[in-house]
Length: 247
Image (tube, rainbow, N blue to C red; front, side, top):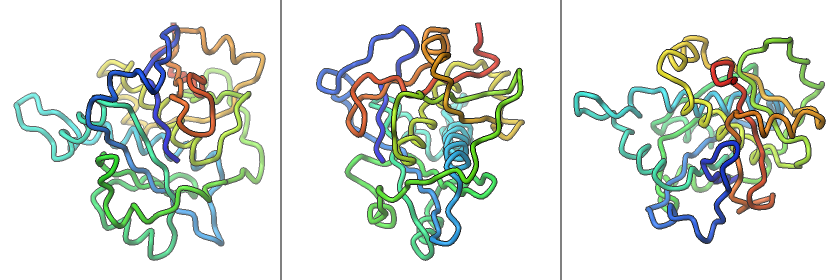
């Protein structure tokens, strides 16, 4: 599921797809592939959390870093090009031989309780590797066998989902990745190192409807979708609640 965001935060206006100046730049996309075997699909929340951690893992990887000594990581140019345009993420599914072929490409596999998500360095919007372009976007509808456990008071980073929106699992995985990325951008280096050391511990939960409006005006990063798929342009999809960003 393709899910471009407008890279805005609380209080910032969303930008309509037709008048965003970033559309003038070459368009790149961050591919994510979730493993969904017929007999052992992951739970939905597990997949959402694993996708968010996969995005963070790539952002923190030295191969994606712009070197202070002038030596860039091998993925740094692609990451810069991707971030200079719309922040697009595409979630596809694979199983069996498809998953093995995808796993042979340069990338990082992140695991959850049962979920496996492989994230790849950004690629041109129309220049996908053949091993990935054949993978299906549809069919990522996952379910939680039981409702996710309530979060304790003072829980760590939480990506709050809009309770008023219905999104497919693939779309929601991309949105969770957007939220994690906005949180990462908002942190200082010390907070980033601490989050990395925790293995990017985080939770994804649907917000209580009574709390949602307050979350979107709290000063925390908010993902506003560009509206190319499933939902209306400017929809607030995720609030990224990291303790180091709370005001």
